Every structure is written in C-alpha cells, then in structure tokens.
Amino acid sequence: MAAVEIYTTRYCPYCIAAKRLLSQKGIEFTEIDVGGNPQGRSEMVTRANGRMTVPQIFIGSTHVGGYDELSALDSAGELDPLLARGADAKGPPAADAGPSA
Image (cartoon, rainbow, N blue to C red):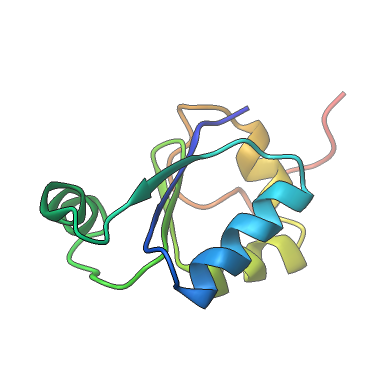
C-alpha cells in the first residue's frame, strides 16, 4: 500500500471531505497541518508545483491534487489501483491496467 500524505488546514471543508473519503476506504494517511506552519506550507507548495490551496494529496510519489481530483479518481475506479501500486507509484494509473492475479 502506498504512503498517503495530505496537507491540510484545520477548518477547510475540502480537507475534511478528503480525510473522510480516505478514512471510509480504510486508508491510513499522514496529515500535515500547514495552518500556522510556514515550513509545512513551503514544503507543500514546493511538492505541489506552486499550488497553495489545501488539501494537497500525495499517494506515494504521485501528486493527486486536491479533494476534487481525489474524488474523481475514486469515482472512476482509479484510486484503489493507485493506492495498491505502492510507494514507488509515479504518474497517473495505467488506463489499461487489468485485474491482478
């Protein structure tokens, strides 16, 4: 299972929704609260290629984006395969990935 990191702020409704979705799927994640944390915010902006909004979600080395992108991956059935690809996951999941044996 890939490591999941999510940069958040305390009262962000999209952060809450993203954490809820991951929790409902039984996914453990590391939360980095960037509210009042300039070092954490700077790290997030660097990793997210300049994006300054929260949440910013990373699965392995893949930058998913925010809640909308996370939810879209889940709706398309692509979130579980991305999570299963492990910590070395890079880029979006393969479109033609078949079921694993």
